[in-house]
Image (cartoon, rainbow, N blue to C red):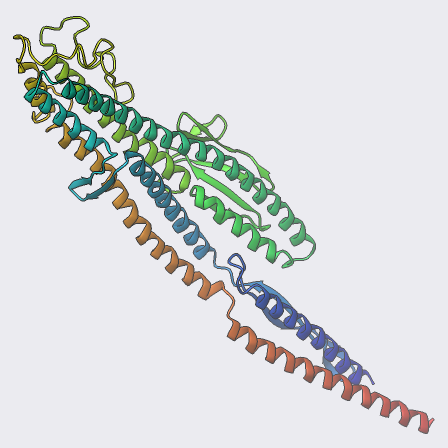
Length: 470
C-alpha cells in the first residue's frame, strides 16, 4: 500500500506541475505582442526521495518558473533607444527651424544652398536691392520711391518675423523639455514603487514578481528615451538608477524603494543631485532638444543678427555718409534681426537719391552697391561675402544640421531595430515554440492523469482483496 500511495503522490505532483506549465505557456501566448514582456520558462525539478521499507520512494516533481531576460541586451536596448530619441529630437527641432525661415533649405557636407520662396528672407533681400536700383534709375519717380519704401518695410518685417519664429522654436523646445523633466521624475517614482513591490513579493514567494520585473524594464526604457541611465540590481531584485553629471560622476536617482534625487531644468541645462550638479550626457530627447536649440538654431539666429548689423552699418554709411543725425536709412539702434527697422524720419517724401540736386542718384547707387559688396570678417566686417551669400551660408548650416540629423535617425533606427530583434530572439515569445510546449505539457498532464487512475484502480482492487480475505 505504501508503494501505491507513493506513486499516487508522485502522479498528483506531476498533475500540478503540468498544470502550472500549461498556465505559464498560456501567459506567454497572451503576451506575445507585449514589447515589455520577457518569455517565462518552466523548469521541472524532481523532489527529494524518502527512504521506506520498500526502498527509496520518489515524492514527485515541482516546477520553477524563470525569465528569459538578458540584462546585457536590456542595457543595449536602453542605450540605443536613448541615442535614437536624441537624434529624433534634434531632427524635429531643425525641421521647425527650417519651416520658420519660410523657404526650403538643403545642405550637404562642406557646402549648402537654399531654395528660396517669395515669402522668404532671401527674396526680401533681393527685392530690396532691386528696388534701390530701380529708384536710382528713376530718382524723381514717386512710384519708385514708394516701391523702395514698401520693399524696405518688407525686408525689416521679414528679419523680425524670422527671428521671432526661431525664438519661438527655442521657447517651445525649452517648454517641452520642462514638461518631459516632470515626466521623467514621475517615471522614477514608478521605478521606486515597482522596486518595493518586487522586493515584497520576492521575499514571500521567490519568482512571483516576474511580470513586475517586465513592467519595470518597460519604465526604464521610457526613461532612457528621455536620458541615458545606468541600472544596477541588488541581491533582492531592486534596481538602482543613476545618471552621469558633467564631471563624469554618477548621480543616484533611485535607490531601492526611494527616489533620492530628481531631475530639474535651469538656465537651459539639466541638473540632479544634492546639491544639484549639471548633468552631462549626449543622448536622449532632453539633451537632443537642448543641444539643437542652443546649437544650430541659436547659431542661425546669431548669423542673422550679424547680417542685420552689417546691413544697418553699410546701408547707413552709403545713404548718410556724413553721419547727419536723423538722416540714416535704418534705425541705428536696431542692429539685430529682431530689432532691424527703418529710421523714424524716413518716408517716401524724405527719401534721398543723391546730394547734387534733382536727378542726382549717387546715394541710391551707393546703397545699391551694398547688395553686391563682398564683406570680410578678417577685415573687420560682420559677415563674409555678399549679404545674400552670408544669408545662404547661414541657412545652409541649418540645412546641413537637418541633413545630418536625418541620416543619424535613419542609421540609429536601424541599429536599434537590430538590437531589439536580438533581444526578441532571446527573450521574446515564439508562438511556434509555445504551441509545441503546450502540446507537450498537455500530453504529460494526460499521462499523469492516466497514472493517477491506474493507481486508483489498483488500490480499489487491493482493498477488495483485503476485504474478501478478511
